[in-house]
Length: 454
View 1 (tube, rainbow, N blue to C red):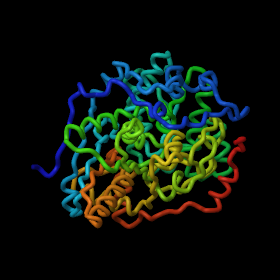
View 2: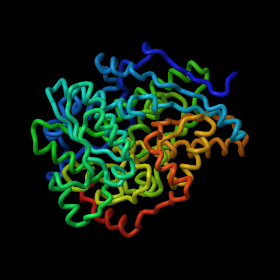
View 3: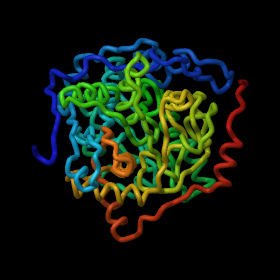
View 4: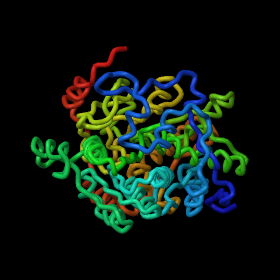
């Protein structure tokens, strides 16, 4: 048998539906609240930002949502993505564990993000929308929406977190190649951006600030809608094709994972892999360990408070109940830009509160060490975000070795790191240091959480 074993389905196996975890939860997630009235929002409240089809997906309790054929036609460009057994890594670690990874870096933009970008762009096109505004950290979401916009004739404006804008010029070039306009955030183009720059002229930015700018642009112009790359229910819904394919590929491999791992910033690639497996469990299937891995410098699940908070820094969004570090929290400028968000998806947070998932946090140097070890065994250079999942998978495989357990591990390799090589250069030169958030800043940010009656 070869060192690396791939389980590849053909395009007839692309799922025909997305899976909605809400349908199987033992307790419904808390409602989204209007920031002014503190009452649950209705579809009309979200209409300035999203087309009605996406709003309905956000609030639905249906277990399965049909994937329209035009979206599946685009998915055929790269889906189904391969499930690969990392035999060389297993041999290097000397572990009895079996390690698999679902590789989402095969998409045109190089990550899992087009799974929802294509869907969101299509639904907006169907609603007659010609322009979208969004935010991005590392640039994987921005480039994915730019790609999707180019397919469906939609202009895309991307506010990219300043520190990532400076660190990752090739991501910016990719967005522009697909036809999007990319702006460093905070910017002088919005009221919220100008307010931040007035206080902090050299602000590194954050996803919370970039979201404020993108939401402001959409809220002020009826011709523009807002598009989000993670966090919200409809975004997680679109990603569940990842886990559904993985379940089918494991059946093909004659195996079944005991441990499911993915990195978590806003929660979309984690939910994409984990939620379909969690659904099986909630419907009477076997229990598995499901681990969300986050950066120690921005640890919403492991250090944040489960409370109602704004999704953005300027407080333009509705209130959602999530694990949060506080909407004014600005994480340090570590390299996994896609994980630099103050909050966690409400649905992922709810699953954590119900005890259905675990969470773990790592500093960046140990994650890059794992990413390099993986690349030297399996040939794929992971994105800095995905390195967190690699680190956890290796640690679990080493635990199996210590305990003499032959468990099966699967993780989501959510994207490749070809546009993140400066981070690897910094790592090899010893310039990549572990960064800690400021405890005082965190305490202040948490003290400023909105008061919501229990």
